[in-house]
Length: 84
Image 1 (tube, helix red, strand yellow):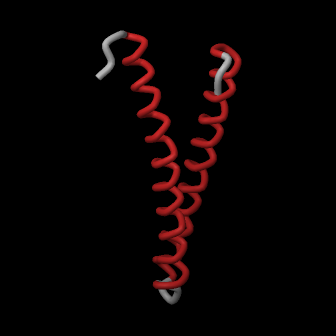
Image 2 (image 1 turned 180 degrees about the horizontal axis):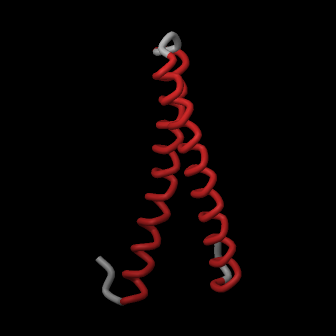
Image 3 (image 1 turned 60 degrees about the vertical axis):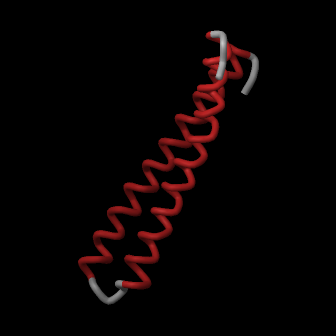
């Protein structure tokens, strides 16, 4: 347990640095699962394929936005705090 405010902030940042890659991994797995579900498992069902296309498109957009946001935050941290 941190005893100072700086220690608490450092602990929170360490936790965030673990959570963010986990969220990326979850989003990636969901995208891959939807691709498999839509085109392999339910390849003959046009409705499922259309739903899969929409979910994959949304997933890819969310993934790209997450990457861009993470990159901007990393750039700001490196610029203002001197550490990435």
